[in-house]
Image 1 (cartoon, rainbow, N blue to C red):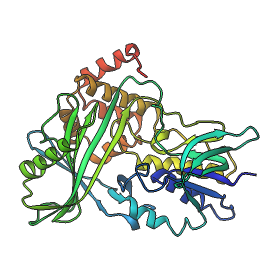
Image 2: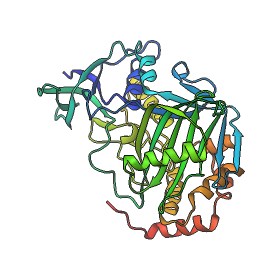
Image 3: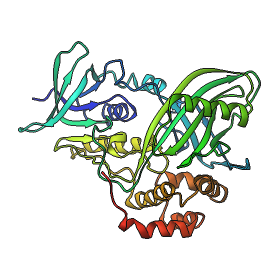
Image 4: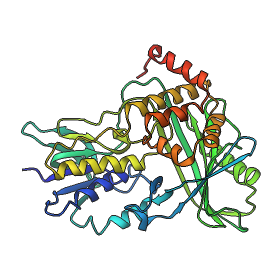
Length: 392
């Protein structure tokens, strides 16, 4: 008999969201036995993270939010601001410690263990097992009917025509003078020096007149050294934003894959991948939290209804194709990133654009958005895709 009905590997957004949804079934449906295994404290456990997403009205995690906003702003390289209201949507910021604290009461029945998972495999008689090693070096076997693995795969996903990275470093800062507009997120500020390949921008999440998370972000093929991020952040906070004296109260950094490779959501008959490993990252933007919620909600519903819990694709084939065209255009230099995103934000209603980025627009809306892009460059990129080699 398996140790659990469900084994979840990883206690990030995907792992915790799935555990919470499984342990809060509809009335009359028994909750499954759930085990969650996470790496012991150390280099294999992810640091604290910030997730941003948008949704209409109240959401499941509103009580844990650090902040939310009704307006976004994009600035072109010339400094021209384009500020837009979000209509019924809200742009929300959630920190991982607050997220876990909010879920803790509902996760009380969860069995948690700390170990490094070294192998996951199907069992001949049904179910699957994870071969683990604890912090003291002991071997541990965990068996379950279904396993959901949220760890980044050790092997890159299937061959891709383009592979870029969204990589960033951010400072949580406090300024001496009021320096931020509390009701508006600076979504993309292209007044930063642009790299030879890809694009760069500033990103500001205001937490009050004196406080914000200020990030420097690049879309490119390789990450920078830590000193280069600090130099870019100093330039952005001093020369561009003119914040004056400030204190750095925290640091955040990350690397997000931007690729048209298809992520395999199934790693075995009883083993599935979720979260980033299961393709929840939107290739053209790096956003993933909303897709993680859709994915884990669908998995939990399937299990509660006694169906095979295959995670759904996070985005449609149409969305995937559009992302491929954009990434290929950026990678070849055919599309100038700052002009592309500034033009979109200047001419497309912000609510429609965010729904587009979430894969929630109709074909007619996609066409209207496409007409606001450099059409000739996009069509040329579409035409060459069938002849572009996929690289492993």
